[in-house]
Image 1 (cartoon, rainbow, N blue to C red):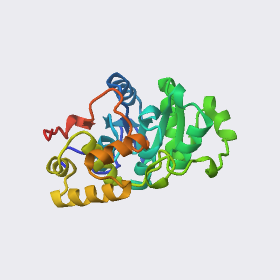
Image 2: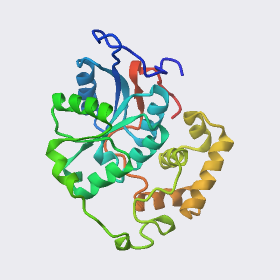
Image 3: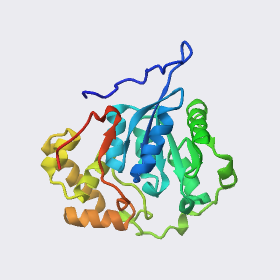
Image 4: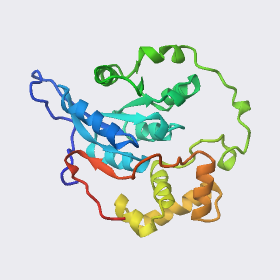
Amino acid sequence: MRGIEPHRTPIAPGQPAGGRSLGVAVVDPIPIFREGVASMVHRTLGLHWSGQAASHHAAMQLCEQARPDVVILDSALDPNCHLVKLLNGGDPALVLVVLVRDVSRTQQYLAMAIGAGAHAIVPRAVDSRRLSEALRRAHTDRRYIDPALSALTARPKRQSAARAAPGDGPLGQPKGAMPLSRREYQVLQLVAEGLENSAIAKLLFLSVETVRTHVKSILRKLSARDRTHAVTIAFRGGILVAQLDDHAAVLPAQNAVARSTR
């Protein structure tokens, strides 16, 4: 991909010999918040900017293209931790840092995020110094819980699976369960945005026939009659979440992946 840094090997100016800076990306619906994180990264020795995204499928594209070391995720954008799980499964070396909003500040959410593969849990209102420290600690130790949240992770609630009512989600899964593959999830999000197969194929660099196959699989897994029904089931079941505040554009470092497929 032209303009995208393909390897995780850049050296920051002033880094000690043998040192290596960490590529940081952020996934958040608020433009000014993304810009604030970018500013923090740019002025922090040992970190470099890998890009930003405002939606799930854009985040997956960004990680495939820019290969950041660390991704910062907004908890409100991923209330069921689907993105955490998919990004972790797609690149086990990737470090995932979840910024927890007050509404998500519960034992249940934190346990779910850690179980899905989050390496660090930090309050969204954290200051830049603590955030940069959390990024480093998470990358070094593969585990970091901000002291302000540690009490919520010490004794997570034990919930019986029997409490989940059968049929809450599609195929009798609990509400919010993820029955789709990584690529099917991307395709479904783009279907929900109203894109046809040809546009989805162009955006994801797939053949139209491959997209068609994914759509058929989505319909089968969700027991949906058609594309519209599949999207309805996905929103009702918590598989898809409403876009919070921003367009679903990928915004990688150096603005290298400007697209005109919409």
